[in-house]
Structure formats: C-alpha cells, structure tokens
Length: 458
Image (tube, rainbow, N blue to C red; front, side, top):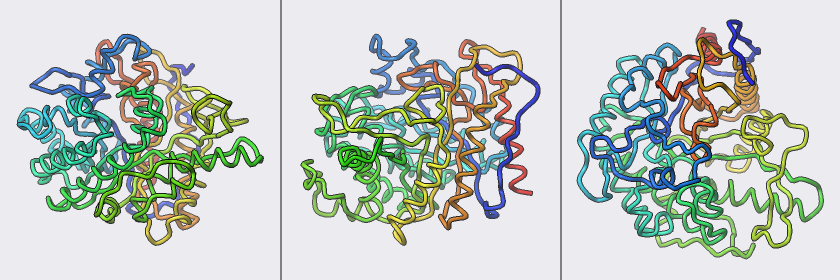
C-alpha cells in the first residue's frame, strides 16, 4: 500500500539518449474520465451497456461522474500546464458527437471538444485526439459490431465529421486505440464490452478495425491533418520454456497479439493464417492498400511482457498466459509483470522486423496501477509508480541508443479514472481523484514527471 508522504523519491533516468524535440505527453480516454453519460443528448455505447449489466464491473461503478471531466476539463488543462507536457492525448466520444451513426451531429458534443482543444492551445499544449477508444455505438453492435464490415464504413463517416468540425484546431490524431484488446478481450473471450465469446471466430473484427483505420486516415488527410496514425497495444511474448510446444504456443500468441495487427498496417499483408489452420481475413480488393497507406507514426502502448505456455486440453485455445517468473507485479497481479527491458526488446524487434517500412514510433500509453486509498489529504508517496515510469523511460532511452526512431513518450494516465471492468479499483493516475468529490490531488509521481520533463528540456 502506498503511503502519504512529503518526501518524493527520484530514481535517476539517463536522459542523454533523448534528442532535442523529443515529446513528453500524458493521456486519458473519454469514457474513463468524462462522466455525464446522459448529458446534452449523448448516445449509448457498448460501455454504457456493459456498466449497466449487473456484475460486469468489479465494484459496480458506472463511470459516472468519476473525474467528471465533461464539466471540469479546465482543471485537467491546468494540471497539464503545470506538468509541462508537450501534448495531451484524449479521446473523442463517438456517441457524444454522433449518437446515431450516419445521423445528426450533436453540436453540444462538438462544442465540448472545441473548448477542450482551445483551452489546451491557449496553455501551449498540443491537442492529440483519439477518434476511437473502445466506445462503439450500441446501435452498431446490435447490427454485428466490428464483425460487420459496415461498421468500418460508418467509422469512416464519423471520422469525416470529427475532422471536418475540429480539424481547424486539432491537427494531430490517433485513429483507433488498441484494436487487439477489442478483438481478444471484447470479442474472443468476452471479459470486456461487447462480451462476445467467439474465440477464433472473432478475427474478422481485426480486419474491419484496420479497415476503419484506413478510412479514417484518408478522411484526416483530406481535412489537412498534420499527423495521423494508429496506436495498438503490443507486448513482448516470452515462451514459458524451451520445448517445441511452448515455443509454438508463444509464436501463435505473438501472431495474434502483435503481427496480425501490425503486419497489414506496416507491410500491406497479413501473416499466413491458413497455414496455421486459422481462416483467412475477409479481405476485399483495395482493402490492404487502404490499410497500409503510410501513417506519420506507428503508436505502441506498452504495459508488460506476456509469458505464454501451451494450454491445457479442452481450453479451446492453443496457449495460456502464465506469470512471468521472478518479475514484480502491478496492482493487477501476476499477469501484469514489471519488466522494463521488455519494452526495449520489443522496440528493437519492431525496428528489425519492419525495417524501412516502419515510420517513427510513438509510445502512446505506458503506466501502472498500484493499491491506493480512496481519499487523501496530501500528495501520495507513490514510489512504485515512479520506479515503474523511470524504468520504462530508461528502456525507451536504450532503444534510442540502439537506433530505434522513437519520437514521444506518453504516461497513462493523467488522472485516476474508470478502469473498465475493474471500475474504480485500479488507479493509474499521476493525479489522485476522489470519486466522491472529483477533487484532484497530484501525486508525487506528478512532480517527478514534471521535474523529468523540465530536465529533459534543459
């Protein structure tokens, strides 16, 4: 358990590999911080359905009001200005802008994001918006969700709406966040919205999300975006042993978590799925050209490596995720090991695998949750988080030394927020949020990151 203290801990970070102009950022997502789920005509997403399903969220939280950023965003901007970040990654809620895909646009929703962007710009912070952070409109899920190719078309239309309305002030964009989590946890095993349990039958959602990325990238380019690309969760996959079965299980998981998403974006082709007994993707003429249109960056969200063993008989999958031997863990327990060197290895692996096709890399999320109290009277002494962040920033530095072109590092998250199926139980923030009052209290990791950014620029 972290304790309140007035004495911050400052692990040393070697900033010498970080070039001038390297960007330092912090991130949030709409459903996790905005609250106001029924305000101003906002529609319903699959996460509204999820939080209203009895037993779905560990502590029964409904994500509302939480940090209440829809009404208190200026407090967030003030914190960001104090932190000294270059850019703020936030997401735009599809259903706050367009409750019915293809239907009327909500002026109130657009006005909120205009105010947020304007306030960021006034504070000297670049708005870096994510078009989609998991909050699929419920009406589209009712028609098949990401299993249905039409969802990609509707997303392309939404991207045109958002870029057309906000592109005069938001010039930097992520298209989709972590399509791998939507596929594997949302459609394959069903622990996150929309709670489908389709195993390998979930894989068409990969292609339709990547197609949506391609359509959105085209819309953003047409609207004059300066910078746009996709961001995915990636992990370094470690076999649990050296037997052929364990190596094969790890290779299969690496393909499904990493390569099936990155290869089509970066090479224009999927791995050979049929050779592994997996049905081919539902590709149509022109899809892969659209998906592989060059982005200005490739975003990598990294939290931990993944150790994989061969699954037990009857599990329905050819692999099993197991604890990483000898690694400390975050508040999520044994399946969230802390191993910063794995980030270096992953970044170098991307450089070696994709070569000249790899655009500059952006770390779109990196952070950790640890047990913390619901209420505080002063800054939390969150030494574990500081150590986690320091280790991973050093890991990025090691990748820079090895010649990997990384341009930005982003802490997840600016604020404690709604952590999906965990509700309020997992706290990732640099800033503590009292969920009864929405009062924000910077933790010592906030001051540590602020000092690091200042030192990096000196």
